[in-house]
Image (cartoon, rainbow, N blue to C red; front, side, top):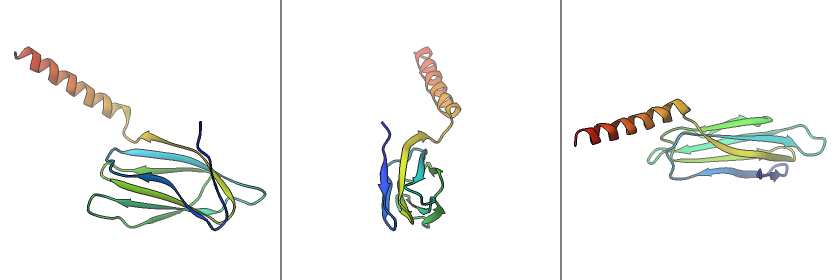
Length: 120
């Protein structure tokens, strides 16, 4: 079941809160205007590593949005500020690294286990 967040004009709502994670992730969500208004808003991305904070990034809100949290981005908060009534839907996350990377890691682990067993 997809999560739906309704935001009224001039409201600022946190839609993503990632803490204590260093796994590369992509967060995707859609925004639709409510009523006859056109889609109008802003995305604010606050990223902090364990000891250092990055500058806050701001982007115009679009119908399809994607936010990427990198490998060392331990804390990530995403806010949406609505200039008109809108609805956020389809909030989901995917691993940012490709499947080939994870297959390579699995191959290295299996190969290491086989070598360890053969050396006994």
